[in-house]
Structures are given as structure tokens and as C-alpha cells.
Length: 479
Image (cartoon, rainbow, N blue to C red; front, side, top):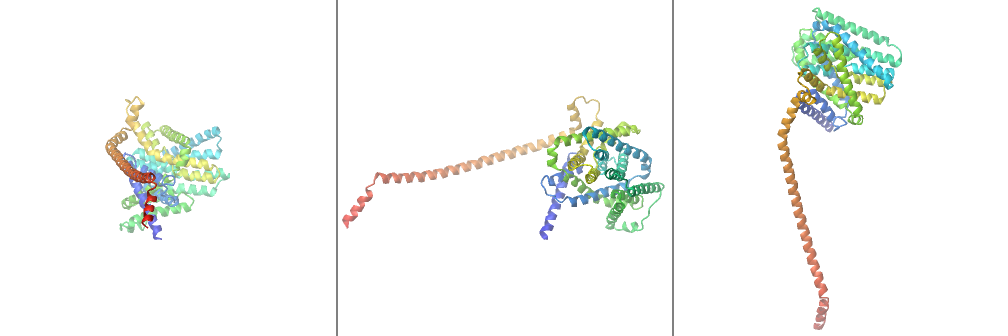
């Protein structure tokens, strides 16, 4: 039992250390820390060093991290500003889903996909990652800007659209409508609309135990966790997404008088749980499958990223947003969302896709989540460039000048130490080789001396073969 507990403790320590080192490395090169967490998941996963093999426990904690993220978003959401944008957000989300579905239906006629598979892949492409998008906005200090508010509004609308998407997939797979699920969906939408309308009018939802909880520093984070996960559990029991319940709980708590205390106490917990979430994404990367299908995966990744950025930019521009803002919001939404994992599993269980397509969707989704920060940085720097850039060399130098300078500076520091280590290794090898050569020569010299003396004794005996007989005769005469 002690050995098992010690093994678990060692695994936790290795995971925490790997996440810390990789996160610090990414921060050092001006990249978000969560990219390092994904990298740590890849290194610790079963396709690399295999240190973390139990994905179920990691996935459970990762789901809690997503719930905490939406809980904090609900607490910090500006209701009045969101109400001014809800029509825009709703229309933009619907057009995104329609455009992505239309593209996959066109491709299905060329590639021979089934209707259900085309619709499923359209939903997968349309949805973006709430966790990645909001984390990028937080790291760039744009969460409360208009770009951030538009992005968060669209992300939340996409999360709410996940429930009707699941219903649509169920109808396609079985050929009949789930009226009970449809009623639950309509009820959930009406509940959220009424709650937001009430809070926008200045209303407050008073929970009797909150005032007692915030008086104790130890009970405050525990109360936040209980409220978040309790609302998520109730939402799941009603057949809705647990994320919906967590978001509503944060919305209620964010419009109460206890909001500042709860926001401060939940931040550290959210950071730890989100680290586990991004770590779980890295664990999902199947390196042998990606290597075997590298060309297909990279082409799909490029097409999806560029297509989503162009599609969302066009939609936002048609809805009245200026080009710069439409482009930056589209870049934040350019990745495939974590809900695609659930959609692909649902499609596999419903018979809409096969095992090979599932693995391909997971590979492209994970890589899309991993490269999203780099794409945002690249797009942002491209957006800020002046018209003086003419050649591709100048373009790459302008976009990645910081990274190039960092690598060059690091190489200047590392090169002398590396050269010294090589010289020491070379001298050590030469010294060891010389010592071994001398020892071997001494050994050969000793063997040669022994062999020579033995040879001399044999020759002496051969030169005087009667010596022994004469001595025997002398002995006999004396006798």
C-alpha cells in the first residue's frame, strides 16, 4: 500500500515539475504557458515516455477545469454589454454553423462522405475552443476589450449550441426526433434569457449561505467549488451540458455582493485545473498515428485553420465589424473546440463515422488547439506590419524577429559551453584510449617475455638431449 501511494506521489511530482518547466520555457519565448502544458502532456503521454497512462483520472480533473473556467467567465461577464451584443452573437454563430456545414456537404459529394458524416464534420469545424480562446485573450489582456467581448460572446453561444447539435446528430442517426430533449433545450434557453434579463434590470439573486461563507477564508473557495460543481451536476441530470450549469452559477454569483471574494479565491484553483485540462490535451496526441498520416493531418490542419479564419472574418465583416477587429476575433476563434472530442465519440457510437475518422478528427483537433497560440501571434504581428515588407525573407524576419533574436542569443551562450564540453569529452576519450593502449601494450610485452623465456628453455633442452642420460650414468657408477 505504501509503495502504491509512493508511486502515485512520484507521478504527481513528475507531472507538476514537467508542467512547470515546459510552462516557464514557453513564457520565456513569449508564448502562453498552456502551450507548455500541452507539450508536457505529449512528453508524459503513452506515445512518448509513458509516465502517465491513466487518462481517465486526468480527463475527469480536466473537465472540472473547463467547468471552473466557465464559472469564472460567468462571474466576470458584463450583463449589460452582453445584452447589447446578443443579437449579433446569435446571428454570427448560426451563420458559422451553416457555412461550415455547407462546406462539408460540398466536400461530401466529391469525397463520397455520407450525409451524417458531412454534418458531423461541419459541426466539428464550426465550434471553437472556449478554454483556449479565453486563455489567449487573458494572456494578451484583451478579455475586456470589444474584441474580447465579441469573442467570448460567440464562444458562449457556441457552447449553448452544443446541445441542439447533439439532438440533430441523434435525429440523423435514428431518424426520429427526441421531443423530450427538445423541450429541455427550449426550457434551458428560456431560463438563461429570463435570468440575464432579470440581472440586467438590476435584480439580485440572494443565496442565504453566501454571507456566512465569505466571512471565513477557508470556506470561500470551498463554497465556490460547491456552487460551481453542484450547478453543473444538476444541469447534467437535466440532460444539458454541465458547462451550462457552471456558467449560470457564475452568472448568479457574479451579480451578488460577494463577487470580489469569490473571484479572488477561485483563481488559483482554476489555474491548477486548467493546467490539468491542457495536459490532458497533450495526452491525447497519438504520435505514431500522426507520423503515419503526417501529410493528411498537416493539410487538414492548414485548411481548417485558414478556412475558419477567412470564414469568420467574412461573416463578421458582413455583420458590420471593421476589418481589423473582424480579423482578430476570427483568429481567436480559428481553432477546433474541445467539444469535437464529444461530437466525434457521439458520431462513432451512432455509426456516422468510423474508428479511423475518429482518430483523424482527434489528431487534427489536438494539433489545432496546440498551434492556436502561435497562429494568433503570427496573425497579430502580420496585422501590425507596415507596407514596407516586400520579400518573404523580410516578412519572416519581421514576424519572428523576437524568437530569432532569442535563439541567436541562447546559441551564443550555449555554443562556448558546448564546445568546451566537446573538448573535454574528446580529451577524456583520448586519455582513456591512451591508457587502455598502454595497458594493452604492457600486457602484450609481459606475454611476449614469458613466451620468449619459455621458448629459450625449450631450445636449451633440445640442444643438450644427453644431459639427463649422462647424469643418470654418473649416479649409477657412484652407486
